[in-house]
Image (cartoon, rainbow, N blue to C red; front, side, top):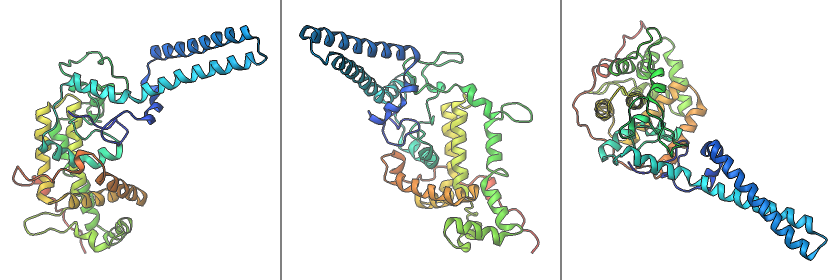
Length: 347
């Protein structure tokens, strides 16, 4: 694993940055805060006493003002040192995390696969060059359920699997939904593509296409084209967004301790068949992703934000921004993609 961005920050890779001093409240634990406070007070007191004694020996008229200023300067200097220490903490902690996880750098293929979810990761400042999108306890070398959090990780405290599993429970049965079962639903009737196709073939389809076209600043015909099949290939619909969500799902199940690292990569590779079977470049993929975001959000501001972030991503130093589009390694599209043709309503 190589250094990545600090979670919540897009600049890649993490480094000492003065703006990180704003993380002081989260970076410094209560005990350390007391120590820093004590050092500041001690420095201010020492400066106060030293200058007071020196000035009293000369008996100047401005003694009190001088010692107060000296104490304030001493306090401020130590405060500045604390800020500088905090500014480097994200870098130190990420190095510490790499050390305790024993992570290797991703292969070129693995980075291509994770680039399929780069839009979401970049927008939210998550990691995109490791299977976990943020520090995870399951990635810590030798980790076992019930282990205490590794020392030296305050800002990058690894998330516990149980915290993620709660969100994977079935609302009706209360049981943990198996990954393949959840993925099957997410790529079928729960997919954005299924909803988009139903909208473009259902009552009011002309109005729906026109509204989506306005949000996308394109023509209604272009919107309708995504629901049209090509020879030997089903409609593109909003499959880029569905692929991104499926990749994210595999990563969550890995971080929740349900899938092993090998199983997660295998599932992501399988999902990638959809992207490599329907698209041939990153431009095609992101253009389709834009349609999915527009349809799912139904909001012009969200699409404009997507466009702005897309331009920033293209010029960023994120590895996902420079890898080639993945080539197919597994033949065929999943049945749910091939068969996604709900009956058209009566015209």
